[in-house]
Length: 188
Image (cartoon, rainbow, N blue to C red):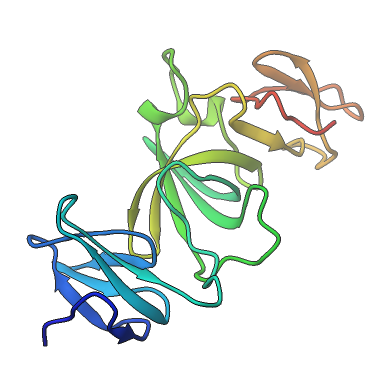
């Protein structure tokens, strides 16, 4: 079925093949197909080769590349940290999808880090930038100064940690020091 500008579509409806148009606002790519992510009217930009869905109600809170998100580190394995994304920065509404994300060790900081546990630990709350979206999976980046760990607990006693210097946190209870990729927005 061919869709035209102005056609009304529902979430999940087929819009085009990804070779014909790139997904714009309100649309996403799924296994070679561009589909609607929101109920609304189709808008086709032939010059930019982009197809979008414009929602009358403002639509659900979907993420775009470049958005800043908050999430919790669920696992740290070798070269990749797995994150559950909880919210988008400066958004009043809950996210429309339960997003899972990953941060590769090369996307953590501009400099070199020896191991990923020098940047993140399980349970850390982080602020990160969305660099890639694949359905409900994201790739994140924390290279910016405002991105990184915004809240962390001591791995020994589970007390909230305080900033010791630009790459170390200290526990006020047991005085344990731990390395992290600390955001300039770290909440003491």
